[in-house]
Length: 345
Image (cartoon, rainbow, N blue to C red; front, top):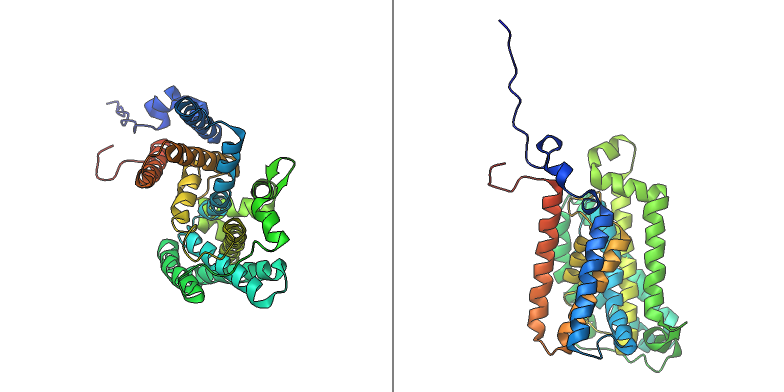
């Protein structure tokens, strides 16, 4: 008697199902993600350009670029930590601490802007490293650890500043240059964003450090067996977040003219995570890139500015950000072909 094997039904989205073959290949990779973002950005620009003739003016584009700089800096480092399988919800509060420290150190010492900036960067590095140590050696989930940091660092900024803006820095040429200066037609703040973005991109794509970060996020067990010091990498990544958040805090001080414990930094963590997810950083780790993140930052900045120009209630901007984050995660789940929770294949 001849036995025949009945082929098992193919799982939807698997190679045997045939749907993967029918799906356009360029939409499945990072290039497809960036093309989608470029298309969405074009739609937003055309829409608001039609609704308001001043929206596409050079002056308004510069306003959008300056406003998006701080979010962009945080989104870049948020992408890095997501790539290695982590998350940092405390970045907004870290910006507030750095802003207050930079302004208060500057006004208290009278030693020039650089001492205030150095103090802010030093505090930022310590705060970031502390997050990493709690996560690594306290064995605390990154979301919980940095959620605690969100509250703790916000409270620290308010304690240092007595809950109000501190210092005045616009009598200093360095702060004026950072907040309002231009180089080759672009605001200095935008140049700082470009330098950080290029540096992190090169680090991720062309160094062993970058390859190890992707390996940690893709499969931490395999990375450990390959001899990668995961603990060291995680602490260093969170310290890097603290440094870049401190730079963002200094720019916030330069832009507003004083140290801001909450105003200007609250809600930045949601924007950074949304931009990273929209840009293609897989929240499970192992995937992501700086190019997509910057396109997402541009999209969020243009959308927010367009809603403001049209006089739409700012509460709707929060709704839009939340909706975009959900959309980004849903797209990631669909692309991964993962079965929906609680539903059959």
